[in-house]
Image 1 (cartoon, helix red, strand yellow):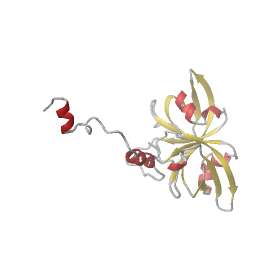
Image 2 (tube, one colour):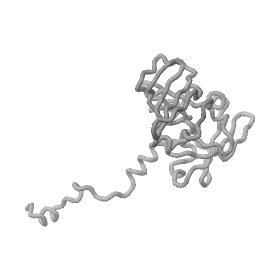
Image 3 (cartoon, helix red, strand yellow):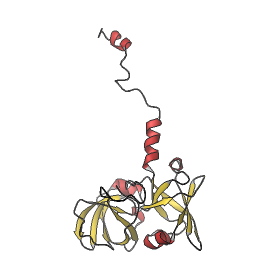
Image 4 (cartoon, helix red, strand yellow):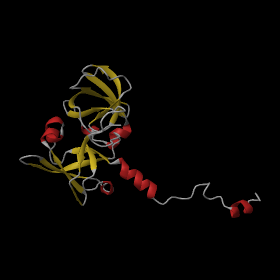
Length: 215
């Protein structure tokens, strides 16, 4: 579990194909002394497992499913990535609950630098806008952001100077692909409220028992 509060921007130093996935090696800008093999690390959104450590670098496995769901297929050596270590019990939850499980890839639709902040808009694939609400939370490239506008298949956010300076979002250009994780709460609410077929237990009635000779 993560918060979407990026700890720093690392740099991809190696990309190696491994079967239908790949191994990604990143140089981190912070101390890796507390990181252990098997730990989770959010790398521009996706939660990945650390499989090798050679500070300041670490290596993670990227599965075929992650490649399909994310923009990692377009990543290159030298690209910057947002990094966040997993949330510890007792830590402050300054952003929002982020799982590191990417829903889809969106495209940058607009970028407008302003005097105090940068306005950006992202265009989502069909079906995902139902989880995006005005003033709700969303994770873009692993960064927790507040949705300021919702229009059709797009949503808009404002990047304050701190976020612009400490993440990779300012590097983005119109048309670039970004990893999106929508708010997990909305997905659970939708699932719980959706019509569903009766379970075996719900289907057992006195009539059912009588028909089958139970009594």
